[in-house]
Image 1 (tube, rainbow, N blue to C red):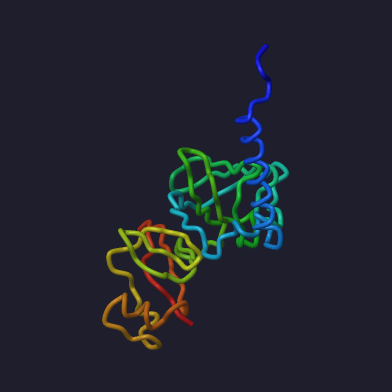
Image 2: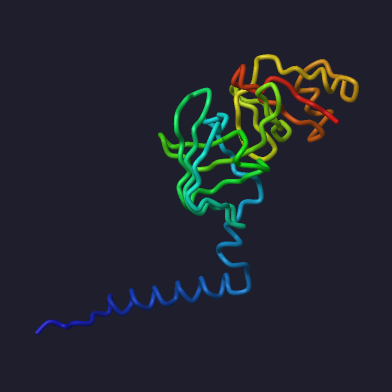
Length: 197
């Protein structure tokens, strides 16, 4: 008759109990795992879908206080003339005051699926405001909130010249810091200028 419990089996169980005890003692007085996992810096998001929402159909759609969509939102977009859909459970943010009027959809996608979205107000002349630019890298402007959008080869900073005169855009960023707003133009499909004040 074979022995059912060997010394190796008992040693393995003992090692697992010791490891569990160590983890419990090491993290007992600390924040919960969810609190530890929260990033202190904004998450970098490459916005690969930027479009005007011409009309939308909401099926129980709302944004929870945690920033997650409830219900579905189906949108007709221009200038692409396509339909996009935000499914329930998609993280995002909404600053557009009236979803029954044209807003701008800024989204990170995976294939045809929107994985993160923002609905922001549309300005006259087919433009919209963005947070300040933190840096320029590889054809994308990195914004202070983590968004990444394409920018024009020359970003017009004439609206800030009186307050922050600078020889280059890098010098302007050092001088202005976060005291400016980036402006995206649909005519060009990129950030074309900055505004101050």
